[in-house]
Image 1 (cartoon, rainbow, N blue to C red):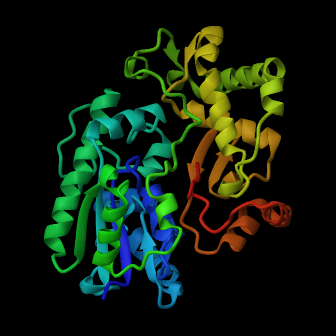
Image 2: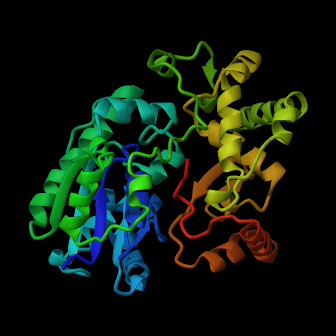
Length: 379
């Protein structure tokens, strides 16, 4: 009998949509990325042959999964195949209790989507938190695409596919369903998927199947040629830290002075715990070409993109929930680190944002902000 359903996928192929589909069942509890998310440094270390940090998190992860009572626990987190999914079978869960959806999509579409949202494996601290870092010890596919964004993304997609094959061979008693995003848009196919795992559809399922989810529309849909084009300017991440920090300060002054109407129009993303993150990303993404021409520097596909985003967030709402996981250091120079591996949201908010942050989050909840699964994005 299946008690747990997970998903092997590289991201940008419908995993959040699958979360919503599973939510429409009468006998499931469904998450996109339940805490601890099991990514970041523990995941990175695991892929370099050091599993200790990830193993330390496993009891907390399994405990969070077992809070579902008699319901089937579903989680579509793409960090599963990058680390903790290898530690679950036999040690914590019987293989026969596990179902896994191997979710696929046209690799060219995944590649274009990752390029569009500027998430290149290994390029920034953000991407190293969420994706595989090329050249890690556990890599199955040799990496030879240094400095090429498109080939790096294609390497990553192939690496996840190879890991899916190895996982299936290593754990043969797990129940697997391999499907692609297009199949999930077919109601009858979804019913057959549910039947395979013993999931019972609810009356709202038909309304959800085929609906677009997590489109990441804050990032503009630029032509592939433009995404891959080299900047005409010096890349900001090649600057010395002091010079870069001064440049960021100038960019921020320009945004808050010349684009104050855009700043005043920023809105909270209530399904994502009321954060301004989505609006600020859209603001920065929409201004990047203008920033590059005005300041004669390249900022796309950079660590500095995220520094600018977090600096804007800090100015408009220093208690934004993003700061419960993203840590902006000002000294000695601007830098960012991330930690999504906490086990108690209230304790994490108190630790990072203090009592004012907790009260702020409670206020947002009273205004209608969703807090159950902040990574589950409705569109």
